[in-house]
Image (cartoon, rainbow, N blue to C red):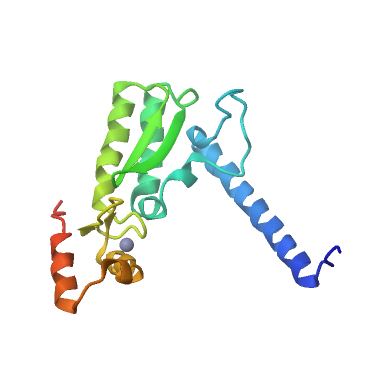
Length: 180
Ligand SMILES: [Zn+2]
């Protein structure tokens, strides 16, 4: 039996449609300003549209902490080296707590700019962009105190901390030196 669509479903669909439109418009202007954020199909090299950009692949905390600076500095350098319309990212991801900005080809100067932000990423919480003060175990990430506590709290049963003192000791052991 086919389920009847409720008024709520229709509303939700409209809401999603609007959200998609707004995102596309936002991405259109973002790519107009920073053409290297446009995504292309790896095989056909065709532009895939504005529903997503490379900027979406940078974790939220890092976007907040230095995202716009990265875009501005990269654009300036690409322009200077006449690469603005040819430079392409191939992958953007987090690895061992660091931002990785893989690209097809670039001049030495451009590579240096990218490396600078890759190194900078360990100084900021990947989740919220605050100063990173702890390194998580297992899946390595650099996080602020608040996010560290939240992640550990969620896994409390898994870690099985016997007492607040044991937890405090564990926390101390995960602290990193993050002086600029
Ligand atoms: Zn945080």
